[in-house]
Length: 114
Length: 112
Image (cartoon, rainbow over the protein chains, first blue to last red):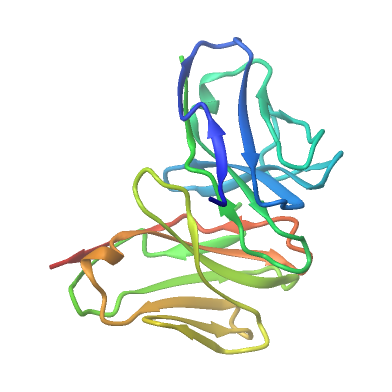
């Protein structure tokens, strides 16, 4: 089954404790991206990757890091989480930038930072 | 500041009604305008999308109307059903699809 898989789905952590949210897609998609969803703000793009080893900032990159060492994986790293990073996070992928615009989303990772 | 402004924030209609959700943008570099549907506990899923070279696109009961000069687009749901109850997001992207800008979302409740 074609899908984008995120882990963990739920996480409660404390300020300053580094964490990684993994994202993997099995559709051979070139493009991957991370979003955070907050009430009243919709989805805001954190980082995106057009292909392996190429990443760029979205609208809200502060406090986050990403890496794209292989095509299928795009982990989101919070080096020192803070309470304002409490949010619902979505990873998404797309077949080929410039050709197909449809984003396929994972089921989300709800993060709480105390 | 929000690049895509969406209204209303929430909407309640009776079954069979025609909810309309509106979005507006300023950036003329936007070239692709999708709508995503999100059910509770799930990720958004593409519903329908339009490019600015057409004024309307219809897929089943869902229609996008696009007004390029006004920089506005809207989603109409014909003969709405309780199963359409979800949160709807409009979005916009430039030609190379590298960045997507989403509206704030509209929570639709279709009453039986």
